[in-house]
Image (cartoon, rainbow, N blue to C red; front, top):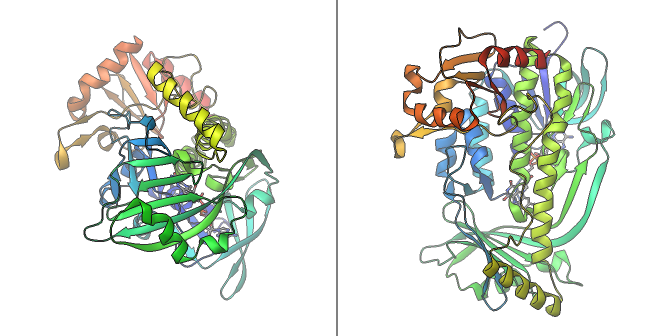
Length: 492
Ligand SMILES: Cc1cc2nc3c(=O)[nH]c(=O)nc-3n(C[C@H](O)[C@H](O)[C@H](O)COP(=O)(O)OP(=O)(O)OC[C@H]3O[C@@H](n4cnc5c(N)ncnc54)[C@H](O)[C@@H]3O)c2cc1C
């Protein structure tokens, strides 16, 4: 490896570091992943991921395993203290990803599945119980100082990605700084196992009760989550007492539940100003943090990982220039900010402690509902308008749909047929595959089950072809030859 211990050094093996490591190693990139702790984070955190994340799990070959630890996203109701429905967010029935609108899951099980997948990838060298301390970089690579159980070592990599969470040392090392949305609310988070005869609600609920704003949502099968806002003067220590927790859950009348995990967090919105310095990048909570009301923190981080993985791979293979990394923050930050702003919008609705303000809010939300007006800021659907795309061409920057065919376990999904490279999908035969691009026409035999959906996409945009990036976002649409040339030029 010419003095390099690996191509990419990933710091932190939470869900984002694990997905990034797996996506890279699956493409043959040699990765070392450092994790300071021996086991996944034990306290309650994410319970929801969306359809696009399931599509990324599909790419990693672990969708079926994830499915076993998850339940389909149910309705999400905002209710007043007296039980009136202020807002009902229904999961989308159709998604571009070809999966359900979202899933409620158990994070330790999800991280367990990712670690099993990593263990099967020869290019991934997982080093648990090793802490990243500091880095230096030069024109060719990055050198990290790492504390291991037997002493300090230096690891040399071409690139380093900090997936080291909210207190990221890598972010500090690159002077990432943080923009603060000035949202800062303390909440008690409790995960329970629901025993036989348990009656936990079957939908997700935000109880907008000014006496105690409360979240009650599904987790993985047989599990449930409550979150209780701390009131002024309440201490985290006192709230974590089991008797207090039982007193809070009791009125929900759920039958036998066993408290599994609990923690007090301060929910806030933060975005690092700088996600890259030379050969060092940050992703996931290291780059941004959101209140959990929209269930998007981990999802945003996994989208970061998918955005970075193919770019690093292309650069390391020599098919793209290092400058491609400049598109990473440009593409991801607007979407991250939209998710944070949506979550803070939800949080401001929920975290109202003044009874008079709560009554006004309830009246406004009920009126908005009957008038058909949106009660929450919409989340940006199209994630980026600048970056690695053919600006101005139809569909550029959109998530390309994954058509499916069949039902149940026999369901066919298009991504499985087309593989990990970029795709050029054209109405008519447009030549042979080229480096990093699968060239396919809609009459290809393996695309037959998806032909109608692909044709509809091309017809709607009145184009002959679409070029889809390896992370399944549309690079551009138009004439096949011109698309291929533009793609190659944009990588260079
Ligand atoms: C109450 C709550 C509810 C949430 N609900 C949702 C939800 O429903 N959906 C959702 O998408 N998100 C949710 N989130 C957010 C989600 O949990 C986080 O965004 C996600 O876990 C971040 O993943 P990460 O891999 O970036 O960071 P982390 O999971 O924090 O992982 C970072 C890893 O880096 C390691 N590390 C740190 N420093 C070093 C070092 N110096 N050397 C080596 N290793 C290091 C840590 O030990 C850790 O394992 C929720 C969060 C909370 C608190």
